[in-house]
Image (cartoon, rainbow, N blue to C red; front, side):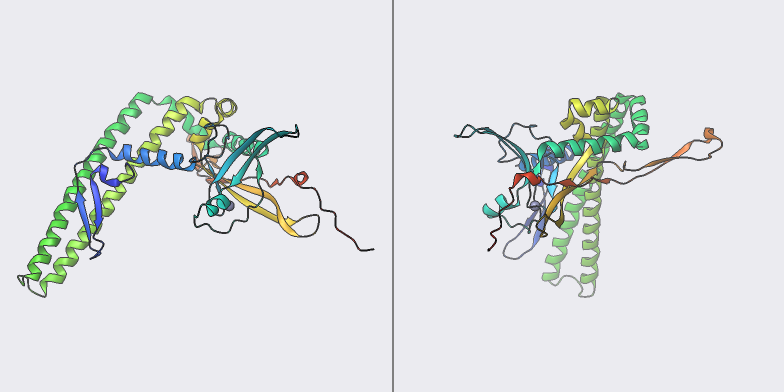
Length: 339
Ligand SMILES: [Zn+2]
């Protein structure tokens, strides 16, 4: 029920017959902040739906998307075959095919080969560690955010959020007033109570105002979301920042969550041993939450370091080396040769 924005007090309703859109204001039940958070959690849970693995058994499936647009899920298969052969397969696989069979519309997927879970986890962790280690921004932010009193920051964020929620309610009542005015003008126009020349101007003015108010409202909701992210970041720094490398080994899933937005997996094509163009590997683009890839610290005055330094923003995306697909997995077919 929380996916309906109506629970935060603002609701759009479209009349199916006339295609008219109405804005309905209902009493606010939850804050925008909680609404945003719930939406995020639901998105995460949605991704893991039907994935009956224990929550963190596959480290990266929460973050992985295939370049075709579908999510990549972790697949763990352990047991023993009737023949006594042990099965121990841990892979990541694009859900495009299974989504297709479920009737979902999917784009063609070039990632036909599975990813070995162990190799993938290792490669991604190695890259994250490298980026984190080399990032001047992170070092700087750790320093500032840890030095600054956390309680004070929490208070600041809470007050700012209260102020923004207030603004949103303000915009919403203005939206309601404007919507009312629009319908009044429409009625008066139908009753021929308004001059034909005045009516279009009046209407345009009101509709412009409505668009402006809706934009402002959306912007303010985004600001609240940013503040929530900032709070998440500060909490995360407090918990993991100081010993990030150790934490990446100890609690990798939680630590990664603070650093990574998404991992997008691309296919690498090439000629296989039969000289056919096939997928020979995967390449992963790691999308960080902050622009920390190859960021730089530059001294304002190389000679006099007392003049301080400037941080140059880096990129948010880091591309891994190619991860070759498991060649040993499929035996080479014996080609029949005619004698
Ligand atoms: Zn795919």
